[in-house]
Figure 1 (cartoon, protein in one colour):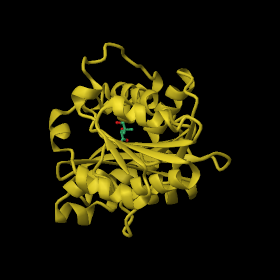
Figure 2 (cartoon, protein in one colour):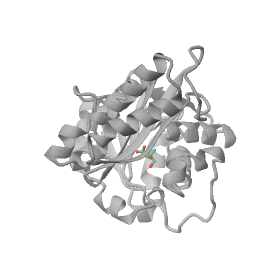
Figure 3 (tube, rainbow, N blue to C red):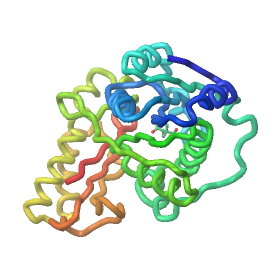
Length: 278
Ligand code: PAF
């Protein structure tokens, strides 16, 4: 496995694979089994698999969050090599941004809801860095996790609007045995917080049960708020019930369409997101 930290080296190396299929998994490192599942999918379907590891400063609207984001490059490389990854691109911030980008990407409605609303500027940062990475790696296929459901919608928009010639593959969320969605941020949870964290998934499953029993989304949201009264350690940022395709709020579950329940909550100083689609 080759590890590069410059754009030049990466592009030069990838030039010799022009006629091969390249699968690409962009990450911010602190890898877990969820990332490795994406790498393995890519390895199975492509001649070459590239993973980027870059904690992108421009997508953090909270400097403290950026500072605390786990960085574990050596461990990450070991996991990637074992999973069959061929190339790692792990640039510094100076390499990616010799000058801060002046353009601004606006994803319309997606900026106004959930992650867009609570993390202003986040998707501008995500969109620009992913576009830069696509230009550097020139993948045929790219792999993203369903856990970041709104990011998936943003990248789909980016690919369509900027005509990137690639296929986007969205992979299921990988969970711990107790239901907690795997996330790089989980390693920042204290023991007590880690024990409580599966309540997030429990609240998503509770929402599903109530919606399938015919309750309105308003009633479900109020019952979920009551559920969290039992666990004051959580600070709920949002709990939204939306159409899976449009991510627009719905008033009840439509059995002919897929519903997504999407949550963000703070627990012990760590911000966690998750979703459940049915
Ligand atoms: O999902 C992530 O880890 C990041 O948002 C991404 C896509 C690597 C862009 O920095």
